[in-house]
Image (cartoon, rainbow, N blue to C red; front, top):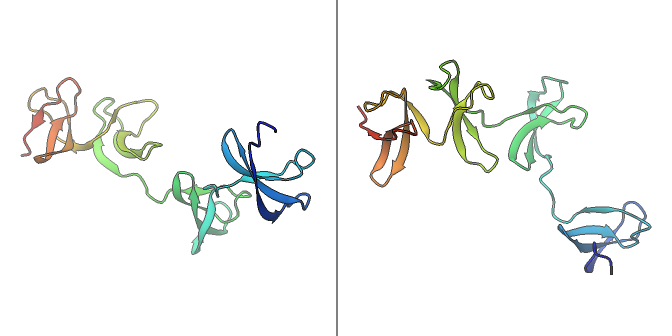
Length: 180
C-alpha cells in the first residue's frame, strides 16, 4: 500500500481525465478524491468544497470599474467579498465591510488616523492608517480624549462587569478615566 492512499472508498463518479472510477483516498493532509487508475492517471481534487471564491450571486447593475462586467458576490476563504464575474481574466475585488475610519489622530506619529482592521483570525483591532511607517495598534475601541493621570492623548473603551468603562490607552498608565 502506498503512503498517500491509506484507504479507498468507491465514489461512483467517472474521472474527468481518463473515465475510470474516482475513489476517496486518505493522505497525510486528510481525505481527497483521486482516480482509481493512479499512477497512470494523476487526477486529484479536494473532497470538501473549498471556499475558493465561488460566485454566490451576480450583482446586476453594479459594474466592474476595471473591465465593465457585472460584479458578483463571492465566498472566499476569509469570508464574503465582491469580485468581478470575469475572474480570472479580471481580478478586481472589493471589501463588503469597509473598515471604520475614525477621526482620532494617531497618538504615536500625530500624522495618521486610527482605522478599524480585522486580523486573519477575525478579531477587530485599531491601527494607524500610515502602516507600515507607523506601527501603532490597540485592541480596544479608541475614544477621543486625554488621560487625567498621565496626559496621554487617547482613551480606550473596555467592557467590564460594571459596564463599559474608559481607560488610558498608554500601556504604562492604563488607569480608569471617568467619562465626563
